[in-house]
Image (tube, rainbow, N blue to C red; front, top):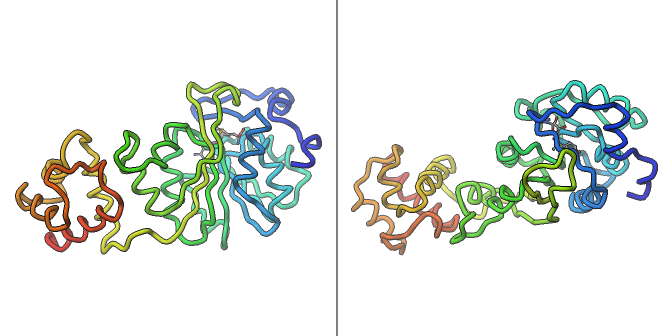
Length: 283
Ligand code: SAM
């Protein structure tokens, strides 16, 4: 961020364009330049990189991404913001402003090659965005995003903790997750009701080999559907299976797990073992 003085701050941009904030699009603009710096550092963008910024807003961060990346695709749902972005970013030739809903955008098709995703995500859709990116294939190099603190904690959670759940298992199946910064709520305008954190997810080969990934995730979802119940009870009630509690307890015993075990105690490779055994039985 050598040329910070050359770029407009988000506050200056809000004032200049007299922009009316739309809460339904999760518009909490980042005003703290120290946090901006932390996101950029965590994302490790270089001149060889293609970057997708989700929800560039007024372009506060986009300007710096254009300075450091080879190419920037800025996907913004709000048409008014896209008009402002065209002006704010007019000095850059390596940016494409796309007026679209990120959830309806085929990102790999857009980029055609490796890419990094960077965003101060709109809170209302941060989980579906992250999961669909992680499932989007091998061209994704990293995701560096600001998320609500609670979501970050769930994504990073370890077994036997209150935050550990199906989201933790699914995200950690695909990626290593690193906490880059804690961000207080007064770093934004308007100020949200929650604190945030910046995390970086780096996709890698899944930690386990499982015969049917989709089926394993159904098991994981069922295992956490009623957190206080044992895994046997959760799986007994799940509509995907038609097995007695005794059958289920026998399967767990075979892989060295007690009948009383709960989903929150299981690591991904135990879910994979359970899933492989169950899929054999029901297919
Ligand atoms: N990047 C800006 C910043 O840090 O100041 C704005 C971040 S704000 C939390 C989220 C941004 O995402 C807003 O600009 C909002 O209009 C945009 N947005 C919300 N839903 C979106 C969607 N489905 N697809 C693309 N952009 C979206």
